[in-house]
Amino acid sequence: MANIPYKTYLTEAEVPTKWYNVRADMKKKPAPLVNPGTGKPCTAEELEHVFCADLVKQELDDTTPYFDIPTEILDFYRMFRPSPLIRAYFLEKALGTPAKIYYKFEGNNTSGSHKLNSAVAQAYYAKKQGLTGVTTETGAGQWGTALSMACAFFGLDCRVYMVKCSYEQKPFRREVMRTYGGTVTPSPSMTTEVGKKINAEHPGTTGSLGCAISEAVEAAVTTPGYRYVLGSVLNQVLLHQSIIGLEAKAAFDKLGVKPDVIIGCAGGGSNLGGLISPFMGEKLRGEADYRIVAVEPASCPSFTRGTYAYDFCDTGRICPLAKMYTIGADFIPSASHAGGLRFHGMSSTLSELYDQKLMEAISVKQTDVFAAAQQFARTEGILPAPESSHAIRAAIDEALKCKAEGKEETILFGLTGTGYFDMTAYQAFNDGKMGDYIPTDAEIAQALTKLPKLG
Ligand SMILES: *Cc1c(COP(=O)(O)O)cnc(C)c1O
Image 1 (tube, rainbow, N blue to C red):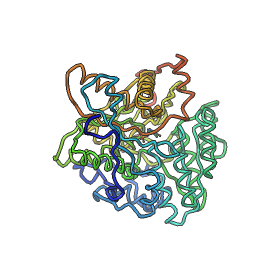
Image 2: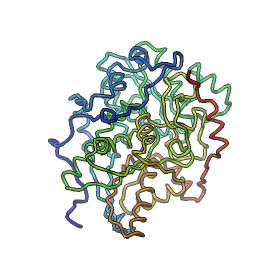
Image 3: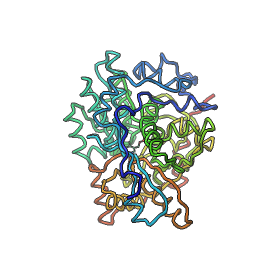
Image 4: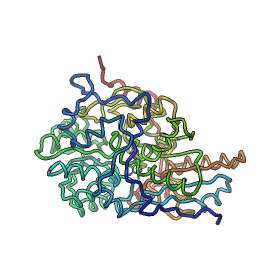
């Protein structure tokens, strides 16, 4: 191997101790959350009924560039951070590409994904506020697992509404949450008013993230001492996830390398937002330039086929409205879609950056995603999460383009997690039974007819 090591770790002394808030460097800021009742931007007071007070401050702050990471959170991070920046020598060789591929691996913890970076922060602030517990939703299960781990550490109750089809497909994921003390309810359930309503309107539904969010919010606001926490989409989550990009940037600086292209999968936008933050900051300040690419599933294409508008974050329409690229809060991805990244909208911060053409987006088909996952597993050894494999697909395609054009680009992608609980999806792929459902324009247009009308 060449002079660049296979893995680059930061020493404990080099690990970042502040999160970076990319909004501080944006001239045109992301649009604020809006109260659907008043049509006006949400105030801190309104948001504090639902969210923890310190997290509301972070959510609304678009001017402070750096936030000190509290010592308790830094201590928890030591259990699984810093994460390695890996040079994908084996994959490069298999592809025969002149491109240099690096990935930042966030799957080295029991929850198996980057979500623990924000879960521990959110649990810490809830505890600091003297709360009893938190509620949340989980789709594929990584966020619920991460939050259960964080709540166990800080001594908080954790109630998770898990999208019904995942609850049934992933019993072991559920048991990991229960082992860490989380209470898991399949959603839509009959334990909330909004769950009963959704069940009545869509009998037999296997649920969606939007439904589960509505149930978790209702449970939080009707239970004393509880607040709701969310694992993606929100500005505060991107802030916590900036640790990924800050570490990656520090490792590249240590190696004296600068990436040309940065690629990440995009569900609600938290890992991508975190990975690109410090690089985007340089771009916004005019100090450097990078190509930044969001990769989303063709079956849930909010950036590439959505509309930039205010929309509900949840099917039950009880959350604040966010301005984002959306394919409509009523959009429910096909049940055959196995690759995660099922949220109908996208982080407001990333939506604004995309709208300003500071980043690109592409969509990929799930069978192509699993083919990339298989190639990656066989070359680099790690069994990737289907979500992460969207970024792998795009990185491989970029590297093959470099090969065809004889270009020596440096590519960085985010490997957000491992796929041990996704073996049903891998099985479908291995058996040749996986399909590629792509929504029609009419389906998306239909879901978009219900966008809220703002005065
Ligand atoms: C949740 C998750 C994602 C997608 O969420 P973002 O908020 O878009 O980052 C990607 N990869 C893994 C492994 C996940 O668990």
